[in-house]
Figure 1 (cartoon, rainbow, N blue to C red):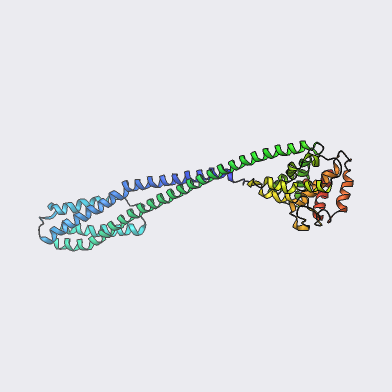
Figure 2: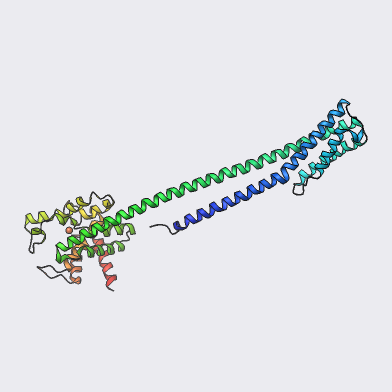
Length: 373
Ligand SMILES: [Fe+2]
């Protein structure tokens, strides 16, 4: 039986995939926005200040500078510094804001030294500031790289999940197709078997409906014994087909109204084995063969074809044997009237644990009692 959750699984999978893709797209948009509005201008500002600082350092140490604010290197540095001061950092953590403040303090010392045209001081202030600037630039670059890696890993992860889901969906579709093919072929087999049973019942007109009744009694017993739904379905099929081997019994024996001779009985006794062999080629019916082959065994071992006794007789066969006997006893034949159900039940009890399994007799009587109440 299929799970109640299964029909909703494809919907749940689609919703999960959709949500994952939406989250991924939002993160990518957010990342693109951060690259444009934050990382790129910030890193450019730091790079620009670094270039200005190197330029100024070069002129300061090589004596190539002109005077004060007119110095091109000094202008380059001051312009980059003013730009950096416009970098917005409200969402930065406190430690990072403190670091930026330290950097700007160090840069302002350079600014003061430039204003005073004290290039020895400019050189010294740049020496204190440039390592801070380098650290900041590196930090922002590594943040960008790490954000890029996160996005890449997430994309690969989501891609992998999507591929897995597609694979699972494909496997589920194949499974569904296989199952529906199997169901179609089983339905086909069942309709062929139903035709066979009808043909069989038509041959023995007085036993019309016998197979259907035996199947019904058998399922009642199985239910009372607590057998699973699958076992009950299998038993139902076995009971419907239990006498299929009578196809191989000639009319002169099958339809003989009186008692059978020993030779005739020997021919009749081949039908359980014939039935099992006829159905042996149908793979899906493998489970019902023991019930068919052994439905004429007796609890005391005096049955046929193998003379099995007690629990060595498959349970399905023990159940069908009793259901078969009860129906035979209670239906009319050309040469005798059927027994009333009460007398047939007495007969079952009388031969309990001799002809029929005691637990099966009890289960049958309990099942009949429930139906008749
Ligand atoms: Fe039979």
